[in-house]
Each structure stands twice: as C-alpha cells, then as structure tokens.
Length: 107
Image (cartoon, rainbow, N blue to C red; front, side, top):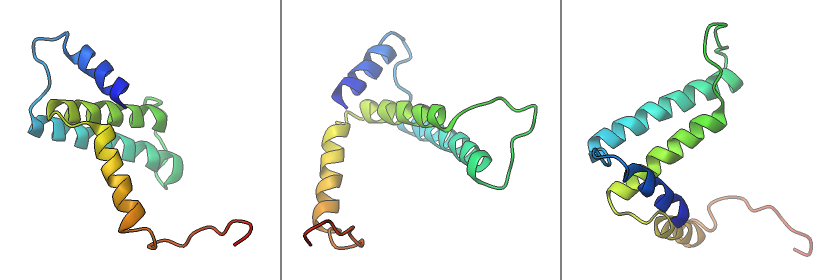
C-alpha cells in the first residue's frame, strides 16, 4: 500500500495544483462511486446498458475509486496500510464472533 501511495504522490507532485481540498476530494469520490454503481447495475442489476453507452468495466471503476481514495488519504497524510491494520484489528477482536464461520476439518 505504501508503494501505491508513493506512486500516486509522485504523479500528483508533477502538477502545481497538487491535491484537491478534502471537500473536493469527497465530491470526486462520490462521483466515482456513482460510476461504479452504474456499472454494477448494468452487469448485475435490472438496467441494461444503452447501445450508445461507452463500455466501462467494474474493474476500471474500482481502479478509479482506489486512485481517488489514495489521493484523499495522501492529501490528509493518512497511511492507508496503518488504517487498514487498525480496521482489521477491530474486525478480529470486536467483531470476531459476529459472523458464522466456515467449519474446517477437525473441528
């Protein structure tokens, strides 16, 4: 994750404008989420694509979301690997018995 954050930071660092403000970043993230939702709806929902619509993929839209998320984190000096580790600790402690586990052999 650190490598991804560094790669995005190097890319954004080429431009005088730098990172957008937190509110603008949130707006971008919301926009990208809408595009992802539209693609998911086309593939798995009841709304087929129009013949005139550009062919996007869920993978591409998830990539866009990841890029904006990394930009957002970088702009606020948030280490996403550290944030991920904290979330996993929470799931592995507080929520460890929340879901039905798959039984493995020997249990």
